[in-house]
Amino acid sequence: MTTTPHPSPTGRFLADCRARIGFDLLTRTWTAVVIFGLREGPRRPGELRAAIGGISAKVLNETLRRLEDDGLVERHRYAEAPPRVEYGLTALGRSLLGPLEALGSWGIEHGDAVVEAQERAENRDERTLDCIPTGRHHETDME
Image (cartoon, rainbow, N blue to C red; front, side, top):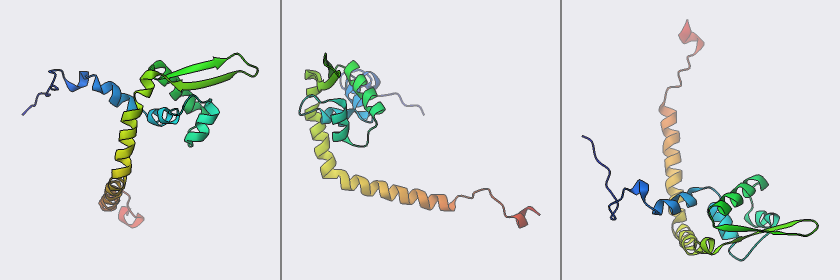
């Protein structure tokens, strides 16, 4: 029996839904963290990296460039010696703060339950691996 995909309430398929833009943006590893890190105003890359923690300079730069391409972040370059660059949220980027704060609140409220479920799954997977034959044979089995 084959099933046909169900279109969204607007009659369009979910794969073509504009909501996917938001979902796709937030599934990128550092997008939400960088946007949230810029919520208080423009920052230099080193300052932003220190505030975030755990992100390399290369990955931060790639993320900022991608967010700039998406219209969420703007780069300000100052003609100083040494040159200074700051990144800040555009109006479009600031419009994501509400949804990110809501998602963060959800994480605070339900994070323990998610971690517990992940631990149960990990334990289940470990038990399953214990039951799977490895294909290795003892030398005595090979004689």
